[in-house]
Image 1 (tube, rainbow, N blue to C red):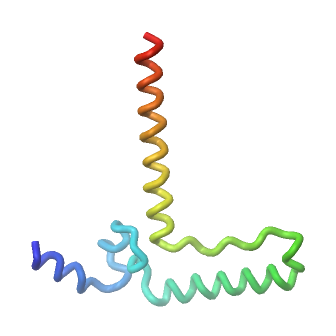
Image 2 (cartoon, rainbow, N blue to C red):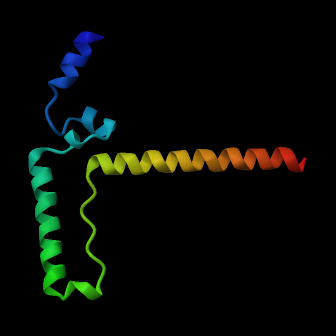
Length: 92
């Protein structure tokens, strides 16, 4: 187990293992820099367009944010299913 954790810690950024885990290491440094460039350009264009009347642009979602949103969605669906199951039992 210890050897596996040491090997995993040495994986490069962008490795499939990090992508499955949903951590920010799922992206390489280049990916993070490109996302920052896109965010900066979107913000600059929003400001030049008179940004106060329009919604501020949303940043590019990072891997950890995407993973957390998926986990939150799973929790909501599990609660909804449990609620439906309880309602079926009461109505019968």
